[in-house]
Each structure stands twice: as C-alpha cells, then as structure tokens.
Length: 212
Image (tube, rainbow, N blue to C red; front, side):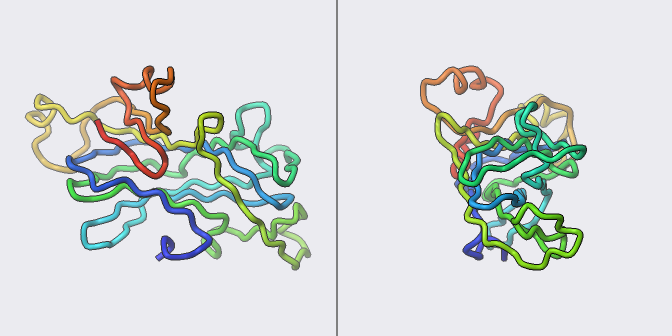
C-alpha cells in the first residue's frame, strides 16, 4: 500500500461517526517547498474501511514548474514558472475526476501526498530539464508540506449535508442527492476563516478532519 511507503505523506481522519457523502469535483491547496529545481505533487483521496482496506477514489497532480504564480498556483500549461529550491509556493490542484462516494460510518477519510506515481504518470527527474528528451540523471527532491496559520494547506470536498428531510427523499445509502459544497481546511481556533465556514463547512487540519 502507498500509505506504508516512507516517501508518502498520509493524513487520515478519526473514524467517522456518521455517513459522509461526497459527490462532485474536489481540489486541494498546498503550500509546499522542494529542494529541487522542479518536482511533482500528487494527491490521492482514499476511503479506508474498518478492515484496513484503503480504496483509491480520485487524484490530482501538478508539475511544479506549471504553477501559475499570478493565479495562486493554478495549473498553467502554456508557460513554465521558475522554482527556487527551499521556497514555499502555493499550488492549486484540481482532482482529475469528480468523486461519488459514501464514507460510511466507521470508515476514515484519507489524503495521501507524494511526488511520484510512476508508471501511472510520467516520472519527473526533478532537475528542471526537459523530462521528455534525453535527460537520464534524476535528482533526489526533499519535500516540505506546510500547514500552519500562514500556510493553510487544505482540501475542498463537496460534502452532501445529512438532514432528516433529505434522508426521507433519498433513503438508499450511496444514491446521489442534491446539496451544497462544504470546505475542508485546517482549523485555526478563533480565526475569521473558521468562523466564516462554521455553518457550512467541515473544518479540519489535514491530519484530523472534524465532521459537523
């Protein structure tokens, strides 16, 4: 399993005490630094079952030099962005496919972050050179993910609210039902960010989601 590898960061919620229905597009905002001139950021959303099975749901990937420094680190395929080793940059990463999953009571929500998913995705040699040409010598990249008050790395999940009225209209578990988007982000007690999302948000640190 990817979560057992030393080069994969794993953030898991506690066991959820109620069903959590996630339907729609997901995204992540990372604040990260690398020791290399270029690197990849790979994020995976995983459903961890009570028996330990970890089922892969969706993924997002960003090659660092494709970040748009004028748009909060969003993907920019048309031009490269210079990466200064050791400097923290924001990366806005959209997952490549929507998610439709019921995290049942007793499960865990997991996020895995790595810098490679080869051979599923083309490898990055971390040198900043043209990886599609004749480059053959890789460089080891040492990565840092920040999640503090000044660098609030977080994921955004489209969580469907669980209400009695909704359960009457949609009685079968796992059947898509309409709803709004909740935000999952690092908790900062007493902050405006936490207060602003308290009513319609899943407030969380990356390693510890707290469900409403």
